[in-house]
Image 1 (tube, chains in turn cyan, yellow):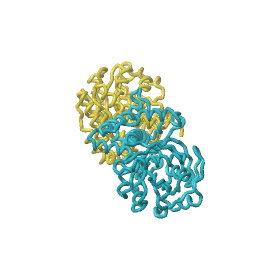
Image 2 (image 1 turned 45 degrees about the horizontal axis):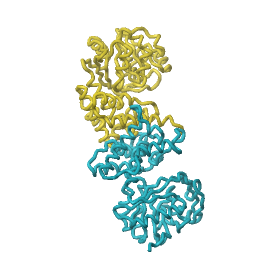
Image 3 (image 1 turned 90 degrees about the vertical axis):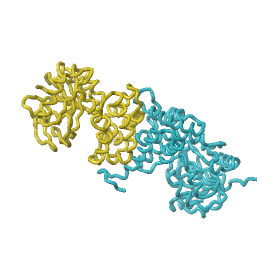
Image 4 (image 1 turned 90 degrees about the horizontal axis):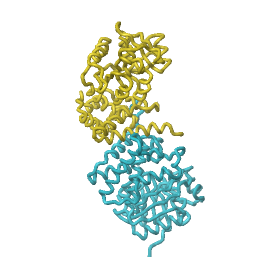
Length: 326
Length: 304
């Protein structure tokens, strides 16, 4: 008989992590591993408030030290991709009975986590979104699902993944379990590689211009060309995509919040560029470029965009007179 | 001989001021910038920096005030080629117009308006420091030659080149000047697109995205080969040379991007992609970079 999931830990209390932790408190003991001590203290003292698509005020046990969080059954790593390694390292030797679930955009985070412990691993991608109002308050914005499946390198059991999925649904979020997540992961990867890196280089939020292909100067042609490269690589790897990335592009700009040019959705990579923060390019477009090399296929436009985003990150290290500052 | 400068910004002013030094040449200038035009008419056109003199130029914001001329030298931004030619075509009913603009596609537009066209490429650089005052940053050569299918005669080309050379500039008249144009086009497309998209000056952009810069240049070289053009130097070597001598120089397209001005990308990467399609040479990267820069320009029009 499988032990029920009674205690969870969310590592990284940004918008996505806070949404998980705040909801899971309804159905389990919800703990949070934070990077900052004052963040943990605030959560312990005031709890975590969710508003928007759902309303609750959750009791949270938070700490910067995994040893203080007890014997958890499930860890959801919800940090930025760039912080996954540091987070996994801090959990090494802890949580011997836990499954690990990664929810970052992109590919290859599971491999990093696997280096720091022999936990079974669940691959996940999440489509929900939130706005972080403060350390103790997140607004639940898009109530779209989180998809999960076994990581081929060291899979969690299917029935345990179904239990995680059921728990997340019972907590009030949307979730779906797949026998193989790669088709969904790659659909989102190809979509993100194009939309995120084009927005990061062009400063243009995800608006309808990304779908225009009629005229020679229409941006959708480059979006489509990048997606075609990604699709050819996925096909060469034997992955049958769950959803056509171009259709995802049409849908995202046709419906909902990005359907109007007046409200322009800024992809996370554009937000990172605006804030001069390191982006997740290495795990998104970088993952396409690495996979292309692995299967011996060209991906010149993805590679060009990868290099351009890396160069934009580097540009923040130069002052107005183009002298290196950092 | 009467010569009219069409678009008397930094480059147009360099040509206009030099040519106005010649006794046998009268220089007119058409430019929409009223303050610049008024200053030129009041105080003459002043060059500083690499050149240092004042020349008498007759500047006008209304092309109707300019008499018929033997030659036009158009130095307008490529975006304004059509509007500038529409305004000034009457001046050249029996004249030849020479483009010293960036990129490809200008001569085709000019040919719709005037009987004889000269294709040109120029390397001097400068910038306007005050109305009527232009600093010459670098000197450099100019190559000119007849533009088919509406060519000026070689005699006319030599006559214009001779005037430029007597005025202190360096101009090389050629039967086929496309090699110089395409060399600069390929260099500029790679350097400007990478500067505009990384927001980095030339040398640092070279360090950051060299494989992309190289691939852009190689696409352009392949298109020039399909057109049977002999490049007069290797654009890749020029990019490498530029990395040393213009390490912190911001290419004009980067300056445009930083000021949120429309760029000349249609005549640069966009031009290479368009002609690549015509001759059946794939140019996926030049096309992608052109569309990204168009996307960047579009981003400035969205509300915050």
